[in-house]
Structure formats: C-alpha cells, structure tokens
Image (cartoon, rainbow, N blue to C red; front, side, top):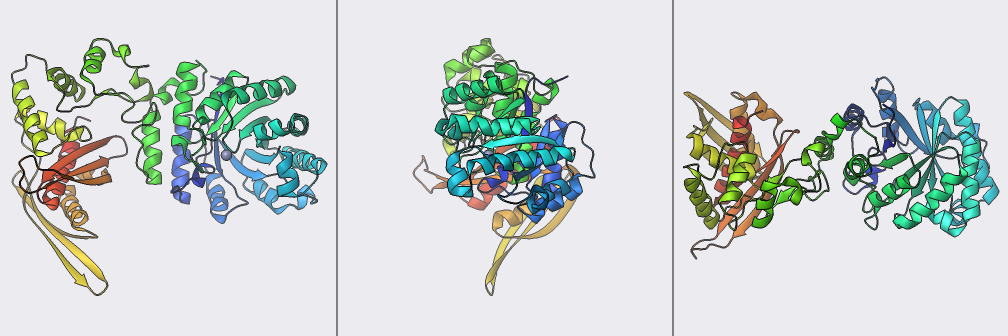
Length: 520
Ligand SMILES: [Zn+2]
C-alpha cells in the first residue's frame, strides 16, 4: 500500500530540542523500533555532526533491520568556500551510512547575508554541491528548506531559486519549513501551491507550533500539494514544539481521508503516545487531541445521557479508531445513569435496575463527602464497584507497616518495613527510599513481586497531594492521587486520610490491586 502522505518523524532530533526532553542511545534505539512497528516511513535519528552520542546511535542503528522505516541522518549544507568533499560535517553524514540524508539549507536572504555571511550565489552553490555529492554516494536526499515561508515572503524569486537549485541537484523531496513557527494556514497554503506549480519533485512540510498552528499548517500544505509531512510524537520540540504527529496522523487519515499509516497502526496511536512519554519520562498530557485521556471524556449530565443514546451526538469520531476510549467523569453532580455508564465502561454488567446500584451510589457519595475524588482515580472507583458487586477478596492485605527516618550527617535515610499477607503466606520486607512514600512503595513492591511478578512492570508516573478542607470542621485531611502505568495502560488511584502516609499507602495499594484484578 503506497501512502498518499509520507510520515517523517523527527522526535529523536528536533523533538530533543524541547525543554526536558532527552534520550539516551538505548532510548533512541527502542524508539526507532516502536516507530518502525507502527509503519512510520522515515525516522530521523540525529545529527552526527552535532554530537558524539548521535554518531554512536548511527553506529548501532545501522546493524539493525527495519520493516518499513528508513533511517535518516540530519545535517547542513557544506560550509561556505569549502569544497564539499573537504567538509567534515558532510563526511560524518556519509559515515552514518543511513539510506536517507536530510539536509537543511538557507532560503531567507537575511540568514544568507547576516547569519552565514555569504553571497546569494554561494548559498545556491552550497545547496547544489552538497545534494549532488550525497546523491553521487547513493543517498536518498530530503532537502529541508529552512525558513521556507519567511524566506519566500521576504523575496519569492530567491526562495524559488533555492528550491530549484535543490531540485536540479537531484533532491528526492523538497520540504518547506516554517522554522520560526509563525506562519498562518492561508500563507502556507498559498506559498505551497506556488512551489508545487514550479517543482516536479515531491513536496514536504515541516512546521512548528509557536502560534498553535503546527498541525493546521501541515494540513494546509497537504491540501495544497505536499505529500510528505514532518513532525514529532506528542509535539515535542523547541519552544512550544513541532507539529504533533499524534494529532496530524489521525487528521490526515480520518478528516482528509489521506492514506498514511495502516489502519491497525492508527489503533495503536494512543499506546505509542504513552510509550514515548514514558521513555522521555514526561507526564502524559490529558488534553492532547485524539490520544489524551480527556479527549473523549464527558462530564455534564445531559451530555452523558445523549452520548449513551447516540455516541456521535457529542463525539466527533469513534475513539477506538486511535486506540482511545470514551470516559464518563464521575462527580457528585452525576446521577444514576452516569454511574451505570461508568460501571459498564469499566467492564461491569450493571443496569438501572441492579440491586447494588443504591449501595454503590451511597458509598460514592459518602466517600466524596470525606474528600475522595474519582475523576482522576477511576481505578479506585472500579475497585469500589467490584467489591460491592462481587464481594471479592483483595489479592493481598497489609498486616503491619513501619516507617522511620534518621539523619546521617548531611543526608537523611528513610526506611520502611511492611508485612503483607497473600492467602496463607506472609512476606516481610524492608526498603530504603528518599522519602516515606518512596520507601513504602519499594518495600511493598519487594513483598508483592514474590507472588505477582507483573508488579515489576508498574511505574508511578505522578503523585499529587492536596489538603482537603474538612467538611465537618475538625482536622484537615489529605488527599493523595497517584498515577501508574505498565506501559500499556495508565490508571489513577486515590487515598484520603488525616495522615499523609496512610493516604499515600491507600492509593498505592489500590494501584497494585487494580493491576492484579483487572482483566487483561
Ligand atoms: Zn524544526
């Protein structure tokens, strides 16, 4: 199946320009495998001329075979007044031994004169020489026209001359870049159309999200003739990020009906998005379009009723198409139908006439009154419903625990001990941590992993503490929300207590119980 729009991922290069994003060589290799598995057409691995880590990455990556993805090394055109074969940075691009080289060059005369300090003609020669040289060495060459739109707006003749220089030298794709991220869709559309009329080479688009239009601009370019789109997973990238591929891809597929990735891969988009955040050690953005956890969440009572009757009444598309799912947010405003729908979504067979419904509602109301909140803690809610419906025994019980802290010179050490019962067996474990909750979490895992090896996969991704105003006017209580993931799914749990450690432990226990009891 030939794609109508090729997808080019630059998470490993442009994505790492973002604040707080960095990948080890091992991380990068894992990420390429994942991107390849979903059928991304090009994966840019890095800039060998910019750091030794990227050189090491290409040394390891070239020994691997990929199913679909073609690996690209990124670099710039030759330096001014230097023969291309004598340019070290260009030599490193060949040494990377990738099938594809992506080369960026200057479009904007401001940059040519003020930043490079060279002449318009020499810049054209730098573009042409470098592309020809790489073509002579058998590479597929993608030419990234830096400031493609800003340069065009400043001087259309010169901008077109640079694109044509790239085409005549043999570039396989010419990519217009909105490097500063300030273009509007109608500008992108008009300029792409002109360039499309002038070139016969495949045209691509590379956008940044500085004014929130990264995806919109990429779509505008595709509608004007581009058939190659660059971006990053979850929109990582410098400043406000690059065009977000987890938004762009479903928009191309479902809104513009442009074939890009196989349908089965589209159903793995949410999983891919979670996986990349996990490797980057970043919290998943719940409000991300398409793949965020609130992308198909409904709260208001009337919306919930309508969605229950006809999904498309308040949903633009079926969430399963991108591997997401509908969620009903529970709040004390919600009535019986919310709970029924929520319970069904969590996999319970419940209807308005289920006997236990009253007990469940009463229990939720009581807990909410105490300060519990289930909107971000659906796993705790699922456990609550399960306990009432199925009278199920918990998979383990904590019999006792102890936490102590001592100060040792400059640093303090926290130690936790837990005694856990599983059936008729007991486990007694000790662990240290950088805080009481961390120490307890470690001790509890050590105990449980002996009985349930899959606990090993669980990671805490977020830990939030709130002081809840006591309704009764006595001591203030603490609410702890924990988010966990096993790389496939993420779930939230809650604990409430006057004591922060007890509240944390309650949320921790719920998190592990949820994993052990869920149907997988
Ligand atoms: Zn960029």
